[in-house]
Image 1 (cartoon, rainbow, N blue to C red):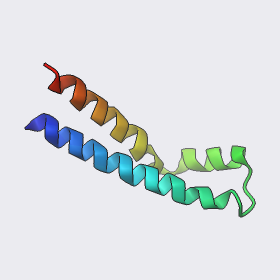
Image 2: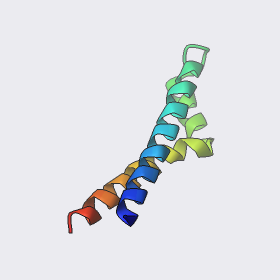
Image 3: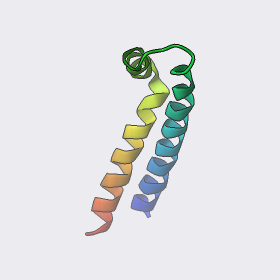
Image 4: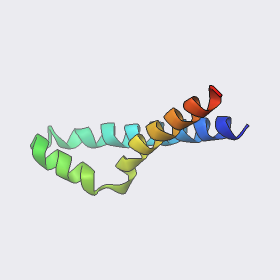
Length: 66
């Protein structure tokens, strides 16, 4: 049951982080270059939810196989 909770929490984090990152892509047509966009994304804490969620999902799936 713990692994399912980890999986679902990771899925929620990945969805939230991915949605925020895609939303911030609207800044590129507004005049930001890709380098400035990457620097901006790196400074936003909520954008780190996506890789954290992917890591949690991976860990949960690996531990579920046992």
